[in-house]
Length: 468
Image (cartoon, rainbow, N blue to C red; front, side, top):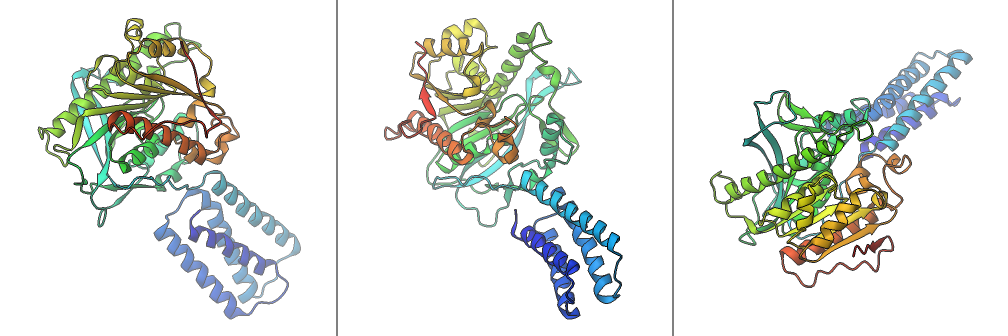
């Protein structure tokens, strides 16, 4: 909760106390308090902005101000029944607003631990070699959106961007996907990131290793901003992909938005050829990753002019994915020799072709599994990939976690733990575990840092899963 919002709650309680008090309050004190209240509300609207959780509080404050004015200046004493009813209404409005603010708070993003400041820039990419499989027009080329986070030289004078760079278009796409009222997650658009729009890229190194992040089904690129900013602060250039029609919302421009297409992955229970749909989806994501790497090559050699000319170390490319995005990353890494390391968070490799699974991976790989995914058919292919890999491949399980705990679901609401969407491990602690394992692995494999070793001894929730 913002400071000014807290003041409004305190002022509302104070004014309500004056309203129900039988003791007369000097008019000049009441006038001063009402003036302070107006000033705080105006500053709140200008600085914080209006959010729906406080609508009932605004109404309660307005009604209390009117009733105090009537009581103090018109000296009209309301009837007992009217007082009781008005007090119940005011207390209810205040209480419901407070509950809404607690259940849907405005959190702060985790602070990155690295030494670099962070810049960010987004691009829309069109693939002229692929028609869109999931859209209404089969003659349109597939488009995706990427966001790049990078070490910045300076952030002075540059605009700090919101966590959801595309604002309420994304939060409302998420609400739609969950079946919530459209406005319910709008508050997330007010959460600021640690990144600055188009800040100059750091000149401390000639170029930086690259990590591409691929979200899962019903995800979106900013659902992994915590990993992206952490890695950028440590000296990586990180690219997050919005997989069109698999993302809850991909915003290409004003009035140019595509939402998740549920027909792309119908219900397993009611679809006999479910794995065919799943296979198509995973390989669509995989082609998006390949398209992104091709685009980075064009930025790097200045075929497409940008600030990133020569800044990508494309000899050091890592993939980080969750669920469908992790399965797609594995599908790419099996065949694309441009990939040097891969991390999969609950990787959904079940839909990958059996002939591809048998090839295994030719690069170092790290797989993290939630307790929720401890059992299931997905493990057959996951174990096979690990067994068939030519390089070190390790599977860890983090007990007390759900599939969604590998995302930023902790930013949604504290209710996620009570409704089973999030596990029992404390959010900040789990985030520190994941960031540590991810950064240590990439430092080892992409920066050849022999001092970075994953040590799970201090984390009782983490254990190695033997697969051979």
